[in-house]
Image (tube, rainbow, N blue to C red):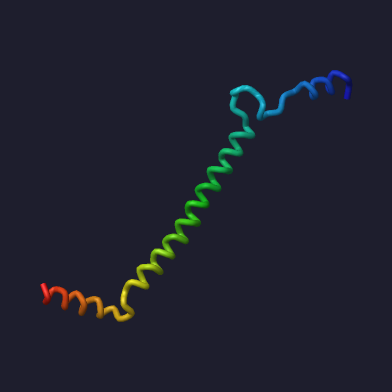
Length: 78
């Protein structure tokens, strides 16, 4: 390496300090973050769906015909 190469590298700005021109590094970083965000939405969405099913199953009676009988009693009272 000659002296002009070392001076140029010392004067060169880092990519994230450059002006407003788009950089490939930032594009890749943005795409990785967006993919991670989508993956988190899917992951937590599945977990929320499972919890929702568990919550609904605790509200329902164990006997599936008990809900029909209960509805029949309510209709008779009205």
